[in-house]
Structure formats: structure tokens, C-alpha cells
Length: 220
Length: 177
Image (cartoon, rainbow over all chains, first blue to last red; front, side, top):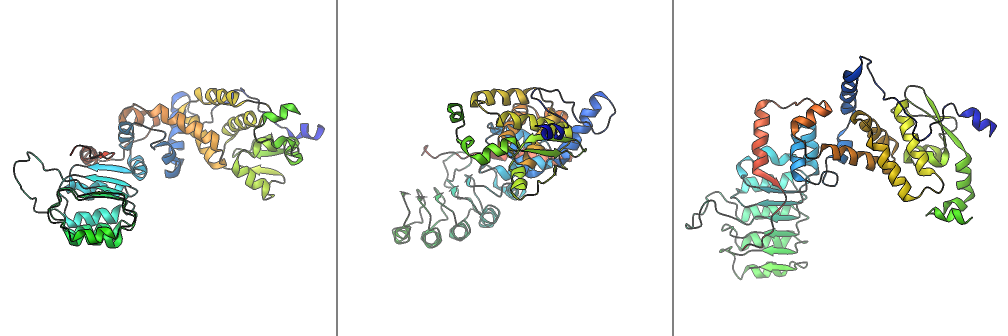
């Protein structure tokens, strides 16, 4: 015990009051400010991501607001994001790169082949892709939006999103048997496929659907 | 001996664990302060445990990224969690009190230290506390409180607000049609 006693140069007992470390002693509040500035500088992306995530900040509104604090926080919050619903596709190239780890994506607007390719390249980990098409405005007309994706875009998805488990293609009139065939060829993990109101898809597609061994749900 | 069963892992029976309790390590902070701590408390930090296992802990363990004030706090935490017979409920209460009075700057000091020293329980506790203080606050409040200057141009800020309106978190289910 004697040598142990000698080694103890300072005993820290529970409850002992310890003064806050300050870097620059200017006094009072500015100390705390300098100190926080210093600490925030050391707060790396990995540590910040432990705070700015779904588990700690459960309300999406809070996370949205924290993302707007500064560029680092915006970036870190984006990396955490696993699901996204997009209302306006024209600006996808502006904001999608912030969310490279998306697992679920929902796009109900028209989206061109080139934008589909952009999505696939930016978020290759997508597992659930909901592309259920909703027309803007009223439902009266059969106005097919000119620049919606077709079988070529679906092939990009099938080839690029290797983890794809579910895809909803409702009312995507550009989709035909050829696109479904590429799902059959590449999307080996597909469990759910929704092709309701895809008018160009015919019985011919059933053959390629038959090759999807893990399929659990099919809507036609 | 009956008391020892209170340790859920029952490690106390192990003679090696007994040795750890009596062996003392010395930790040295960035500003040169030295602290003694029992090995059993110190190895709650995975980083220190690794150093001990690799036998790098012969003399003094230097912790160049942790200052004395913060290290003292961390040691208080480690001692409590290594305490014989401290129940989970007691520890939980201690954790609660441990972080409750901390100023924001101190919370960040401790979170950085807990991360560096790899003390999982402490890291979890402190980051939850920081997150709690940021909930339901405006962007301006967070910037002011954390002394973070916005590095967005007004144009970027405008653009970002629009993007937040175009893209929401979450995915709708399709039970409607």
C-alpha cells in the first residue's frame, strides 16, 4: 500500500469539482466561446455523425434544421440518411449527392432515363425503389409526360442497384417487357415487384418474372 | 463470496481480475498532470486496455489528446463504473448526474475524450445529452449556442431551403390505390 500511496499524485474522488479547461484566459464568457470554437473544430465527421443521426435525433424536423447549421453538418446529416421522398426531379442533381447511402427512394414525378442513371450511380445501395407515378394536377387527361424513363432506364436500375429488393413501377407507361426482362436478368434479390397499370407489359413478361426466385409479392 | 455474485460477469473470482483491481496505472494528460487509477477501472477504456495488453503500459500512459480537467472527469466516471457492488441502477443515476450539470464545452470535451479512449458507455451517455440539447431548436439557436458560423452564402442558403421542400425524409407506403 505504501508504494501505491506514493504513486498517487492526485486522487480524483467522485463529485470533486474540477474547473473547466480554458484555452485563452480572457475571462468569463469569451473563454467559453473560444473553448467551444476550439472543440467544434476538433469534432470530426465520424464523431458528429454519432450525434446527428436517427437514434439520437428522432424527429426528422430536428435533423432537417440541424443540417442547415453549416456545411459540415449538412454533409454529415446527409450521409446518415437512409430514406428519401423526392417531389421535384429537376433538381435531383443538386441535392441527391448529399445522400449516397440511401436505401429507400420514392419518386412519384416523371423522371428521365438520364436522371435514373444519375440516381443509380449516386445511390447504388438502394433496396426499395418506389416509382409509383402520380400525375400533377387532375387525373382527367392521359397526358403522358414526354420525358419519363422507359425500359432503358429500368435496365440501368436492374444493372446498377445490386441490392434491389422491391420496386414499384405503377403507371410508368414507358415500361414494357424488355425492361421487366432486365429485372429478371439482374435483380436476383428482388422480392416485391409492382407493375400495376404498366400498359406495355404483357404476358410475355411472365417468363422473365418466373426467373426471379426470391419473389414474394407481385402486383400486375 | 456471496457479494461477488453481484458482478454479472462473475469476473471477480478470476485471480487475474483481482490483480487488476490492486494494480495501479498512471495516466498523463496533455498538460502534464498525472492521475492514478486502478487497472480494472482503466481498462473500461478499450484504448487503454489495448495498451495494457500490448504491454505498452509499463510506466506512465500518455494521453496527449486529453487535458487534465477532462481526464479527471473521465476517471471519476471509470471509477464509478468499476466500483464493486455498484448496481446498474446506481450507475445509471450516477451517469445522469454526471452529465446533467455540464456546460456545452465540457460535454464536447468529454465526448471527444470518450471517443478517443473508446469508452462506449460514456460516449453513448454524452452524445445523447448533446443531442437532447439540440432538439426542437432553431438553426439560429444552434449556431449561436455552439458558436458555429454559417459558411453558406445567402444564395446557397436559399437553394438549400428549396431542396428541403422538394425532398423529404421517409417513404410513403402505397396503400392508397
